[in-house]
Image (cartoon, rainbow over the protein chains, first blue to last red):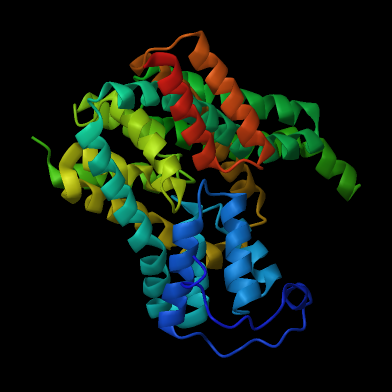
Length: 220
Length: 170
């Protein structure tokens, strides 16, 4: 949707890669809204593809923040609860234009995607009894399950890699946390929130204890 | 039948105590089904719609909200998932001060692993709500493979799976 993205390319892709580009005055709220609108309508599947889109529109095309800043902001945005992309939108909106910047950015991102999601669901409800839709759904559900498993693996992989870099005990401990999180949910009777809190607390002390030798070596 | 305050509270709570757009699935799956607000099939359907439509995948909850309570439900769901990420403003400040502390690092790692594990189990559990056969298993594996390459756009994978469904079962 090129007509919606901002008009003038201010810095080139090469320019954005170097640290010394001149930062422009804060963008107008309208421009912020428009930029996030185009991110919201073009982004599918989240994660790395969305980040790529943000880089292109916020960094390269508009030069509002540096590439490095987006990377660091994205890392911190993995921590707060909920959708990471909304956290990033909030953080960049705040840095660029304060509270109004958050509202403009979130509105730009959400208005089209929420409207399309509602419209699509409403449409689906009207046709869901058709046998052709039921047949299509029997193909879509396994694909959704596959993509879900992949997403879960992508969430766990960097954490397992970090554990493996420490020692094998840490890796085993991480695998146990990963598996028990799932198994206890299958048992159901325990509220999920308690399982998550318990896993957090186990992590707090478990990793500390498992890497104690490494620290004594370092201090020695 | 559906209490809008309860609906909002449950989605808000599940989102507040999980990470990423899909971390709230286990808690919602548990709470909403036991109340009879949503069915297993509606979970599968709204997750699929979340993958197809533009914007963050985490907006699947908006679709689920519509299944449960129409436009009101989807708007309540939107507000409930938009509020928790606003905590980034607090998190960013705290992280600059305490982020490298071992207790913070350990807690976040343990939490995220449990989120990933329970999420995977619930996703696999969606199989129970659908008719599952050998072709379904092949579709699961193929979509994992295609997704892992990161070259094929997700909506394309879903569209391909829909066509396979029509070809196989219609």
